[in-house]
Image 1 (cartoon, rainbow, N blue to C red):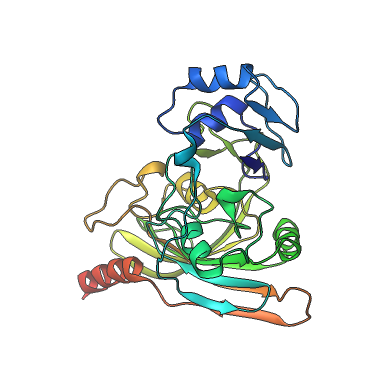
Image 2 (cartoon, rainbow, N blue to C red):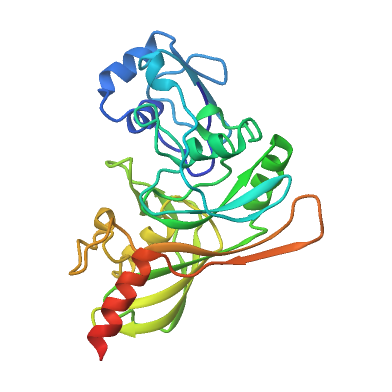
Length: 304
């Protein structure tokens, strides 16, 4: 298996990264695999404490049985919002993993993509991430770009790295946000004791989110968020830091609200980007999904 470390998965110990990837396998077993040479970084052996850097290539095998590692195409319905010969934009539902992990290999977007597109998917990030250029958290829904070939993958990855696209989200925040608009500029780093989380930290990477209030309710605020950078969990970390976490985001301190959902009420609803290898600008927008609509209706009804 081959994994390439991107800017959102660096600055973490090799053993911690693999422990997070392989939920259920003890860290001591991961460390033993690294020490025995079953895991290499950039074709060389590293210590378990090696700090991963952007661009590092991790190769490993036999950490779990081969049968678990096989990724099968699955006939899972896909909502394709836009498509050409090089790429597609998918509306990923909340609750779906973007790509498999070694211990969760079915029901993901990649399984659905393999059924729909077969071999017509990029493989720069390995078999587990066929076609995947960027991702959304399991319980975040919305627009996601898919590359059908490696040349397009490189084009889209470069566009993302250089911030040459516009991504906007809708979210319900807990409480009454104090400002009508705000640019949140707080550096984000991986949490030192909980590597599955991110946190605002002075030694983190520069991160910018533009927030605009759309509607205010009792106990909640409906907002639009524009990502200038794209750090892991950026919106969730920034809004939590401002003491107004995304509604029902239990990982970042919101707790479960009176109306239950599968975690954070957050949707990637807007994309604007240059069509690969063309001057044409593509602009896409979708309506609130079932989860967001449910929460909006709840708060609108309470206001009457």
